[in-house]
Image (cartoon, rainbow, N blue to C red):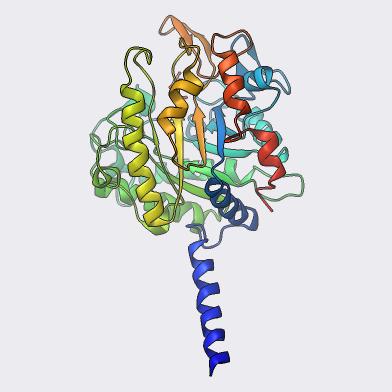
Length: 376
Ligand code: BMA
């Protein structure tokens, strides 16, 4: 009797663990499942990966130099997480919205993955109603128009065909698909994109998410994605954070984006506010057994020399998150007539502090995560 009991316990336990540690896509590839489980372990160990948008494509004062990265120029190592964006792919453009040829992007993704890094992809899809402002159009009814039954639904499935084709072209040396932390419809609680809170209802948003996932998985056989639910930093309660949350079976990672705007030496709002957001994120992640991340942040042109250890680290506090990613190093931005970059480059004011940040045991760059073989 005792033997049978322990057998039953074993079965329940094993299936319980399996159910808990399975990504949202029940057919996720082996490497994707491994990444999901390894990221959970990594976060539990207290390590935080550092990420940078468009890192390998360009930096301040350079473009498309093989092997180069501003982060590597400063620290000697690449970021652990590489962010890329598919905006423009829906129009069959050769380059994404920030000018990166998709052909090069594919190569950079392969390089980062082969070295052991992690790939995350967002999609600044332009408005399917063809509005001039691109992704930043907030005409109400845009989401409704692309849902099944909507007048632009066929266009949307064509767009997803293009997204799927690119994702399915991301392959490692052995032909395996490169797992991607897919972050569509990011900053969904904001008020600036056509999928934001002021442009569609919660129900429409959730349906968009569900349809997108269904279409990629069932119709296009895309099974190498982990799905990232990504709000902006404008929620103040758990209920608000979850207001547009599709469901537990459709999300692998919960996250938010929040930037520093004020001078952190005279105004501690960013640290205080981010701590509140982190608290809510942590609670949700624990309750729902999801991964958590600070998917976009930064202080444009990093004018405060100690921002990394004095501000960013304090904003994250003791919370366990998978990664923190800073936005792209465009360089001089003529449209704003100022510098637009978020990671230091050699000689930048916060370089020394960034090296301190890099040397901390808690922060992880590419070499450290490569040792952990996240896909095995
Ligand atoms: C913004 C800026 C823009 C860019 C957009 C999407 O924060 O960096 O220049 O087009 O992100 O990458």
